Amino acid sequence: MASTTEDQAAVKFPPLLSKKFDITGIKQDMLKWDKEWEAALASSTAADVLKEISHVMDDSFFTLDDLEFLHLDLRNVQEGAAQSLRKIFHEGHFNTIWLLLDASEQRRHILEGLEKASEAPTLWGQDSRALCPEVTVLNSYQRAGRVFESSDPALLPNSSDLPNPWWEQTSNDANKKKRSKSTKIVFEVATINRNKFIGFFLLFSLASILHDITHRSKGMKDVLNIVENTGAYFAYSLAQAKSSLRDKPLSRCENCTKTPEDIGQGVRFMVCSTCRLKLKFEVHYCSQFCQNEDWPVHKKACGKKKVSKGLSGTKGPCKGQRSPAAERQAKMLEADKDVDYFLFTANDVPVRFVIDDLGAKTVFWINRRMFMTQTADSGLKAMAEYMLKHMSGYPGLSRDIILKQLCAKHGSDSTEKVVEWERKTRERGIGTGTVIGSLSKDFMKIFGNAVSNW
View 1 (cartoon, rainbow, N blue to C red):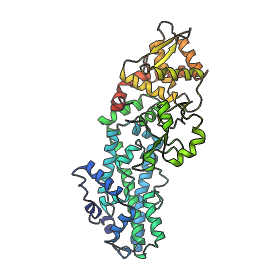
View 2: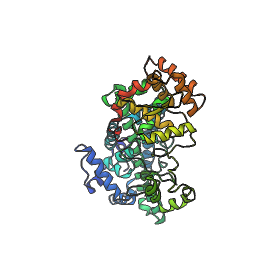
View 3: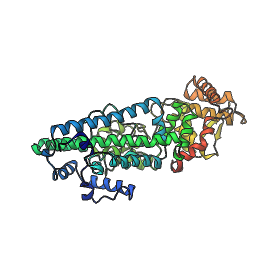
View 4: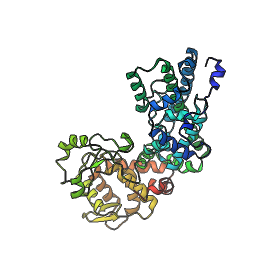
């Protein structure tokens, strides 16, 4: 491959793996293209991919100058991706915006990143896709859109330090088998090419998202309204809550905390049969080993109480200890699913608070879920503001009575926090309204079908 720098940059080998796997053209049907690559890689190992590459070239094809150029070229791409990530995460609300995006919008940006990366100047073009099984629309979507949030800029400038078990296994197997001297350099070149493809994928996906932010596109406008009209922490809390909304509750192993997605395709979680039969309550385990290891803890409540660790994203009890008043609220809400919250008169008579507006109800429930499943007060202030606005004049209730109830449940400083929240609401120009009320329409557009399944 000895040639000038210009020639090296322009080198691109003809399609090999995409022909072998009979992959649909990316311009013809992008979704089908991605699914076919996923299917092909699911039935292949990294060693299989490397073997196909080795059929058409060996180490004699590359010179030391070629390797030096390829490493330098990779570093330039990775530095660019790392700089973009650092700038976005340090200067804006990118994580919040990404998590609030509709799933179809997330998929569109990921697909555009894959398409542009396949067209970028890598050695094997779209065949480089075969070296990166973790970079898929399905994988990114299943992990709640955290493909960018989990990308560590510190890793990118190092061509040999983008860990992936699938690719690392090739290196381990090859070392055990004493890889042929004729393919050592081919493996190094393939690794460089793999990491360059990932760098391009990040760059082009980010560019697609930033384009929509700059031009306030249709799919981005509602998200930007949320971010711009709320505090940073509140918006991010809602984004985190949205990311946990799923068609079905998320399963996590009660012992090791892994999800089926963390472990891999085809895994089926076990459920404690005693708890399911007697309590209609599911406690999940990824394996017999984890169930046995957790048994000393779980046996105390097995079949007797609905107790789990309240793992993040799962449908389960509160993390930590609730106050008696908060525990009472939780039990009453569990018994009456139509009620959004229970308030109490000075004589302790319960008043059912039910929100008719579906958008406001959605935002209220997200906030309620945040603070009912953890010991911190996330979500409390927005809920309190909304209830004070709509229920202070209800017979038997008043602003002081409602605030006193919240202090009993969530701490004596609750009134101070709510008053400060109301002040900030006025400063944001919401006037006599509430944050929940102002967000209701935008959130119905953003949450879409997830609301009806929640």
